Image 1 (tube, rainbow, N blue to C red):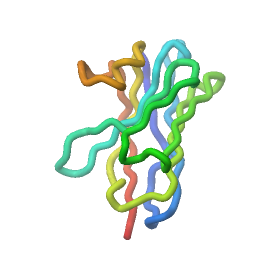
Image 2 (image 1 turned 45 degrees about the vertical axis):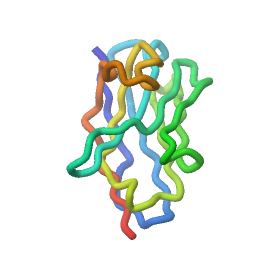
Image 3 (image 1 turned 60 degrees about the vertical axis):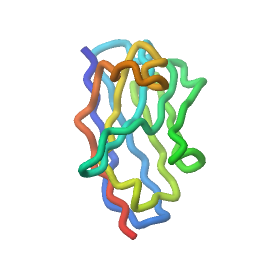
Length: 125
């Protein structure tokens, strides 16, 4: 089992920045690709960003490209999501996820195996 705990959410004005963190435990962190998803009220959970096991390859949803950056520190068992130029439409609960296969994050065949509990991000206009 992999346990994931997100932190760093909060309330920020439009144009501001936040950095989310997701601390992993339970298994070898570097064995897992990591990703972020978000779910706005009344909407489906959507892919935001993903990073492969080494951190050398990243993937982004079109809606966040150029504004968000995913990174990981395998020594600290943590993945980050730096969010800049935030917009009110970025308001959502953000979830961290882990899976042995990077492809899970870039295809729609199944959901990642492990999820965090989520952290709320609210962007005011």
